[in-house]
Length: 283
Image 1 (cartoon, rainbow, N blue to C red):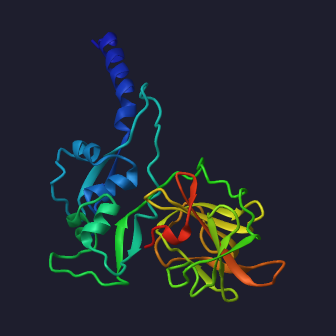
Image 2 (cartoon, rainbow, N blue to C red):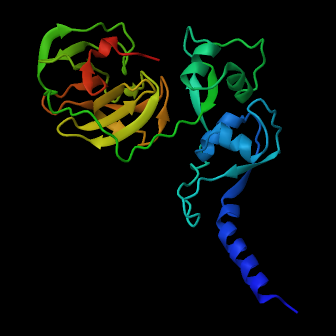
């Protein structure tokens, strides 16, 4: 004879735990992936990934291996509260600069030297070369409620007599560098017509579009917190949320509507305070 109370109890238990079971999915390990890189894809910690697969941070994973990927749950276990990061972009690309070391690149990206080498299939005898492209962990930044600096305190059309050092690395080649009048918070850079404007510091694109009299503007926030504002662009080739590295093209130089000259403006902010662009970090 069927025990109706037992059936009801079993059904209740299964119903309670069903959301928990649905919170787990699987990831098939690809060549060059590490525990850290996989955890970043799904927005979880390495510890959570290891716990779900009964392994430690030092465990070796193999290509083709399937790992359980837990997703965070709500308190009532009825709804998912997080969605894995989009998987179409698993890695960012870093261009090696003169003087770079494995240690420096790894430290900036929050991984170990061994993880950086494994990500790029490099061995202990590998040597870095300027211009070399390296895979680095994907950088995912929430750009929906970003607190951008206010540019309205400076008029981009008023310049001082102070000139800057054109030999430094700037977004355009060999510009005439003129500081804005008033607080030293930005420079005007002369450019060739439709010249490509490039990134001088790696970071995440936080804003793209027209900005309060500055024309076409791109804000890039670096991992050190500095915000680089490239304004007066003619065209823009990036979109919000993109991760760009040193030398990447942001767009092209614009034209001053009054003077008819080709130019852009560059401003750099640290903790919302403007700093001299000539002293801002490069690379």
